[in-house]
Length: 294
Image (cartoon, rainbow, N blue to C red; front, side, top):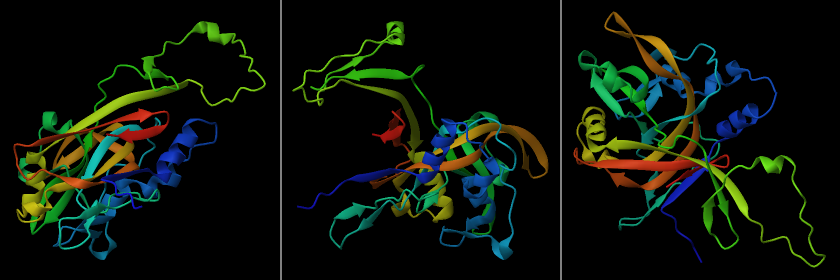
């Protein structure tokens, strides 16, 4: 019997590598992983006439804030969006999400969260919600693209939950008496398959609006709203850093994401955001070293 799913999610190799370094004393050489950052990708690629990212002409590169030691360890901070998370199976209405690979380092067809004309760049308040700013020429005009949106964490502390074999969940409180634990003796015929489980989790979310997506579709795809169906969610680790930006010769400071890697890639059947008034909140939680997306 075939089992068809509405989405597939995978944690990437880069997430596993970063977690490994975070939990042991092996020296962390950040330069080793710079070539695999989204910062590096966007310094070397730009849009072609079809809205696809391709190598910049002549192999040229632009500065995309990243070329310094991040100083602190990267954490899950950002989400990006894409439009190639599924394939049509036939001329009927059936479609199937792609199964992303753990080797992926970006989405199949990412689009920016914001695309604004150079003369109308975001102000400091608006810019605070976005990361990975690049300047691109699209259809002969210059724009600033903001590729990622900042995740928010509604919880003030890590959640610890006890789950019984029957599935009942209750909050678990740490107990200093467990510094001197007592072993539980099993009977010789006992089968050790009914233990309670304890999981740790931390909720996060981000809201994406139809206005953001339609803005990008109008500029990149000439207003063809058939592209306004978000079917990829790209959860990224990185480090927030205060950097100096440029806008037509005027410098300013802002918070940028550096050392950004794709941690989790989710492909779905798509969410239609062609209505500028629509909103969609993507929610998930970091649960016992895995990222679980609702």
